[in-house]
Image 1 (cartoon, rainbow, N blue to C red):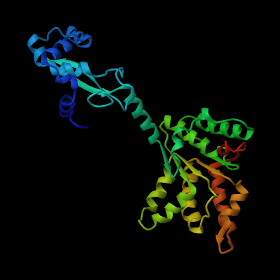
Image 2 (cartoon, one colour; image 1 turned 90 degrees about the vertical axis):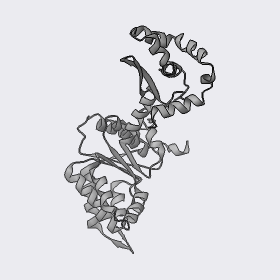
Image 3 (cartoon, rainbow, N blue to C red; image 1 turned 45 degrees about the vertical axis):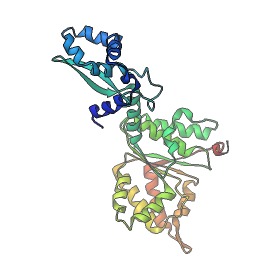
Image 4 (cartoon, helix red, strand yellow; image 1 turned 120 degrees about the vertical axis):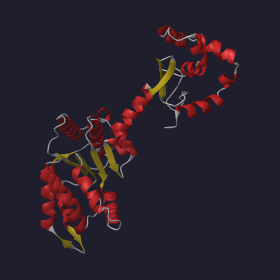
Length: 310
C-alpha cells in the first residue's frame, strides 16, 4: 500500500477545496460537527496544537466515514479508497488510523470466501451459484438438491461419500454442485472443481513441464473434489489408470468425498472407460475405476427441463 502521507500529498495537490485560502479552510474545519466533536472529547488540545494540525483535521473532516459520501466502493472519495480514518489524540498529536470501510470489509470477505472455491476451466458463473436459485420443476432435481443439502448440513465433519449426478444436458447438475461449493466456502471448507475435458488436456501438457505429480497431489488432497462432465472426453488408458485412478484411490483410502457430473449413468460410463483405443477393450481396468467411484460417491439421477434452452 502506498504510504499515507505520499498519497495525501497528491490528493491534496489535486483537490479543489484545498486551493481555497487557509482562512476559509480553517473556518470550514473548525465549524465541522465532526471536528468539533473530536475537540470536545479532547479538551487538552491547546489552540496552538489545533492550529498546527489543521491539515490533519481537514483530512479527517473531508473524508467519508460511513460510506455516506460514496456511491460505491469504486467511486470512493477517500485518500485510500475503501479505507476510513479513525481519529486518535496522543500527547497533543492528532493521529489518523485507517481501516476498511463497510464496503471494503464486504469485498474482502467475498474474496476470502471465493478463495475456498478453486476451479479448473470452469465458467465464472459458478461463483454466483446458490441453493436458493435452483429451480425445482422435477422430482429428480429435488432429490439431488436434498442430497446435496444433506451433505452440506453435516457440518465441518464431511461425509465420506459425494454424489455421482447423471442426467441429460442442461438439467442443472453443474450448477447444483457449484452452489454446494459456494455454501461450503462459507464454512471455510475448500472445494476444487474440475471441468473434465480440459483437465485431461492440461494433465497431458503437464508431462512436459514436470508439474504433473504436483497437480495430482493437489487434486488428491482437496477437502471436496468435483469432476464435472466425466465421460465427455475419451480417457486414454494412461490417464484413466495413472491420473484418475491414482486420485480416486487416494481419496478412497483417506475417506475424502468426490462429486461427479455426467451425461452417462454408471453402466454407460464403465463402457466408456473400458475403451482403450484401436478397438481394444479393458473391462477389468474399467471395473476397477468404477469400484473406486462407487466408494467415493452415490449415484443420483437428475431430471428436468433443459435450462440452457430457456
